[in-house]
Length: 323
Image (cartoon, rainbow, N blue to C red):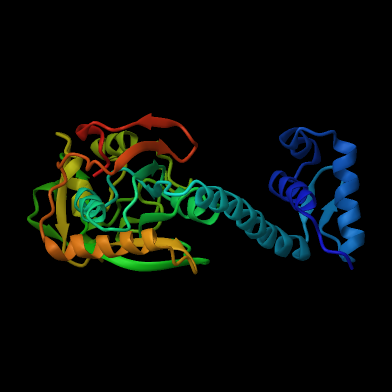
């Protein structure tokens, strides 16, 4: 049996994700007949059925589910190898740091300052994106390191805990609970997170905006509006709550709420000196201060800010710094 090639994997992933040959062909900018032939050739080559086709639908078989998972990982690895090789070939390129604005525990200015002092430091490019995008950026080589709130799928990544901080609950100012000095999760009976999950279960993976798609929130402004209207509650870390004050929203202590944990992650097995220096700088910065300022200006090391879709914002002003 000959091995599958990259083109075949790309074609299969498109069909498996679209579950429609026409849409997959359009996505790949090819005609549908050669796409159908490629999938049929793959099935003959592997000796298994990957897709069940009827006149009404396309469905993955169990073998197809396995190939989709591994094909995505293989394509990510190829993309990562390409990007990292190009990065290495450019000599002293920037360290690419992926994160979501405000979700850095307030430590980013101090971490960047500590990193800048290290002999292995490089200029830092900030890659901003929604929660969840950082992991994919590490896997496909767009980022070298990321600051990510737990939990997330850390397969294929090395991870270290950087910071643990309390969470609060965000309530409408008119909520009867808003006047209470402290609460317990049980007191939130009848209230839900933005995705409809009962608040009494505590924070999940989709209580905030722009996460895995489950929550009906486009952004933080949308979420805070829902809270202000009494349509949702939210469990932000204290550092996020401090930067998002709003007249119609009250933040309250919940005594049995689990803390928020901020992790630093990088591709598994990477041992480059500048990534190691950044990880060490993060730990040093947290140990050096228990009350890091979040309003410090950007260190000189920050040369560019981009989003994870490749849009460049240029060098940030202090007010634009995602700290």
